[in-house]
Image (cartoon, rainbow, N blue to C red; front, side, top):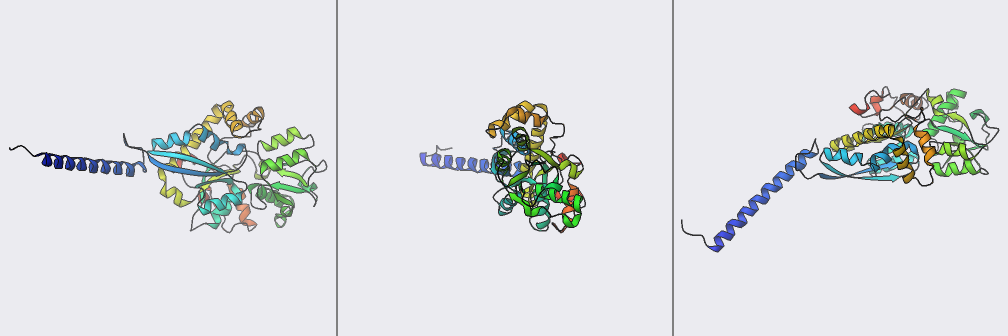
Length: 356
């Protein structure tokens, strides 16, 4: 065979390099296509994804803090072939959270069961918003600094009740439920006119300092503990567990059906990361308390730790005792569709099986 010229050899080398590049591209495309459906193929480059989560204030969002700080979501996503960047955006009130979810500013919303039911009802047949997971069971307490106010019966027209969002936050809905239990369903909205929208830190400061029109705050941990510890006049006049009939998941995470459908691997990784965080908090409350204190300057470590060790506080991602509030909201006209079972307003997943 006659020797090839230099130009011929160069041409053949270019052809070989081009063929090799095409084969590499095809392999990478196949790996990326499979990575979104399950575990990553060996040696495949992880897909890039961003998970945007909207949250509010308090220890009730500790699952998200721990899952992020310990890298549990990133770890679970890596096993699914995804390289995930987790972004957390802090807002105040269920209305703001719901607006952010519907506008596409966030992928997963963190708020009370009240806002979840509102959005589930409003988006049926369209965005189809449903619950993703619970953030645990916490008693929410209505705290007053007025000595004469010992129950909701004693609230005067001049008293103002701080809640994250007037009429629609989970605290507002529980207060409506309590009013219906006390004065009849026709009086469910009796105390709505006395509500004032305030973020929990501001409302807690008002209760602790006194001297303002805010004389009650439907709070969450650790703000209710701070109020009781720092103002001798502060006392509990209502407890969410009393109203709802036991431990309940008052704060939850929810998303659109499209997000779940378009991101099956990311969705699974997120849930698995939350479940891992719940187990971590139970096993390592001291480390979990440190995570919260680092992310919330001014928090007292021992107070946070006391909340985590409270037997009434339960860290689980399966929703518990949520159906009753949804049925009540339908009965008073807050939502049109009555939920018949937890599967109506929560996405199915083995990690939250057995929820109520």
